[in-house]
Length: 172
Image 1 (cartoon, rainbow, N blue to C red):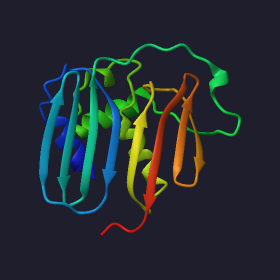
Image 2 (image 1 turned 45 degrees about the horizontal axis):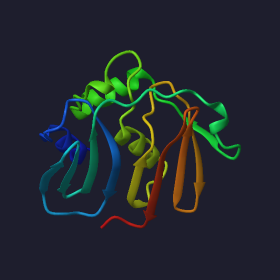
Image 3 (image 1 turned 60 degrees about the horizontal axis):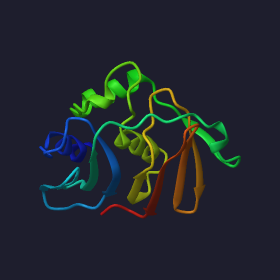
């Protein structure tokens, strides 16, 4: 599965060096090896397939916008999930050959794929998922989750960070 992300990180998108993921889709069913980039204005869709599955990422050019903290943005029924330290982010991007500058420095943005793989560690029966990002999550920011059936909402003190819909099953 990581081979998909590593391949995606090496592809030339034609965008600026700093990009954020707007949407990430992962299907864990074997596919024919394929890599494709479609760029339109300030966005690119990267599709990578191999024997582990298919990863489709919609990338948006530019660094994340700073946001103000609003602790009331976390719903009362949300449960604390986890945070990612700067060291964890740096180790992950080094292992994945992710050179995006937003994942560097003292307070890096946590890669969306890193959050997805951390969530998947606790949900091994998932065969596909669709993750949509609403704002970037910086290191050392506690993420709260609300799970309702096959839908997950993730919040930080800055509001809704991402939504994740998933399908359970057995990967073929």
